[in-house]
Image (tube, rainbow over all chains, first blue to last red; front, top):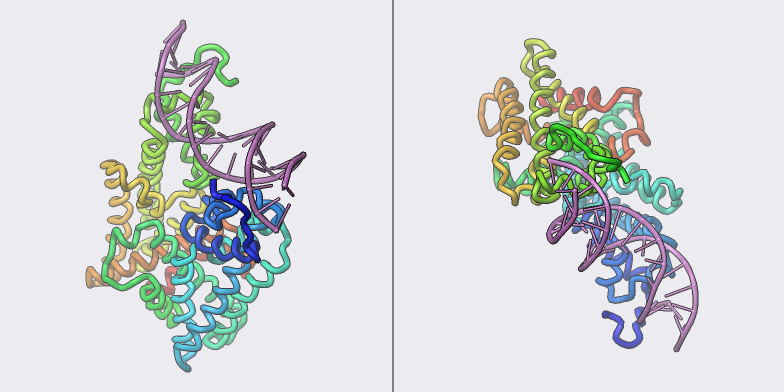
Length: 195
Length: 195
DNA sequence: GTCTATAGAGCGATAGAC
DNA sequence: GTCTATCGCTCTATAGAC
């Protein structure tokens, strides 16, 4: 019974999205539940439905916020990586793996069919921003637009695989070195880009 | 009410594992349910518990069977790829992506923490067989054992990422060519191996 | 805008008949 | 070895009080 007396948050939607990011990172999109999120924020299970029509709308809002943060993380990683275009792209790939490992949200969630059905404008825009950031970096190392796109696809797959396998305990079970996941992903990306 | 009269299957455990492979491919490990599987096989929801102690034990049996089929698929792909070691490894990587796309089960499920806790001997052995197949192929293109292991990690991440993104609709949304997922993964693997 | 309370569904797992 | 029946839990979503 969490609701001892009146609860007044000031900005419940923002609180839900913020805490939802953490929950999503812990349980993944399939395990995500409105009830659990409400519990964490300290409101009744009914409260979120006043601001988000249903579970998927709430999930989409969280995914939108995650995508925005992801785009920013990629940009920051590229900025900190120096002037070499290949190294900038590799760093962004590593940052992608790190972000997904930490927050459990990547382009898989952003483009997941259940959310696509909502035709959420903000989510689509945030997803495109992530792609544009990567494509922009790739175009500095591949002259052909088609080749740049293919490289992005390969790097996203690589980074996403690293994050997924890390999450599911495969990398820790079979650890070759003591490098962390983003470092490994960055190294692999370097090899991929140089090929 | 499925159970009109007596149901006699002959080998319910095998039927559950077989149908479970299909169910797992459709809904993923998180969405897997004993009740739904029982319905598909045509038995009561209680019947599976006579053969498998709980949900995870059943899931482990299905994952074991999946891993065995996966190892066989990798072996077949390498065999059909000809004599060039790099091409054999690339083909196996593509086959991995294809298998995970089709069956929804990869090394993520085999090594998933929930199943690891069971200390299932058969599952561990099946998982090791998959890894050994890949490592064996990698050792033909990388002299150092550590480098071979790292290459396997990179290729599994790559293939797994392709499968995951394909499943979640990302690749179909952003399709560069009309190549299917295993073909793309094989191509990417070739680049990775050649680096 | 948040609460309490509830309907309705699905699942994991067990008990006891046959 | 399979069935019917059931308990207890969690979840989504809604209704109505405040």
